Image (cartoon, rainbow, N blue to C red; front, side, top):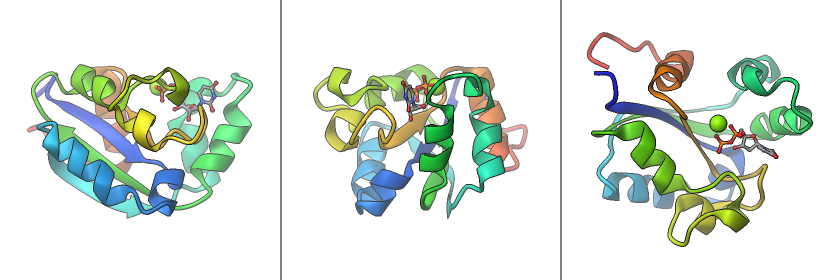
Length: 139
Ligand code: UDP
Ligand code: MG
């Protein structure tokens, strides 16, 4: 169902700090349904592929190193207007600019170690979901 799903990862800093449960609770509390979820660790090539769009950016090496530094929790989430509503729930990339009450404001350590990922479009939600799960037609 285009428009109703997004993809998220709870990033290594948040998992290592024991914030997985608190973050999932906020996600469910905001009305998202978890339709697939797994805890795993990205290899270097996984992280390079997932963030391929940022390959030329100055922070790419640091990003790959950080994203492979420990386990992450990947999930597909369902809700009406999922992509946009989830980006609002997580807040700005840079936690110092994130609104009060957002997941990044509450849990992120820095612009790099910013606790959580959220897809930026319906198309990317589908691509990213398929990176970790086999998404069937119902999504
Ligand atoms: N990032 C970083 N430095 C920057 C910008 C981004 O380390 O100056 C990292 C950060 O972890 C961010 C990810 O790269 O979440 C992807 O960047 P993007 O601009 O797509 O931000 P997002 O969509 O995650 O808010
Ligand atoms: Mg992005």
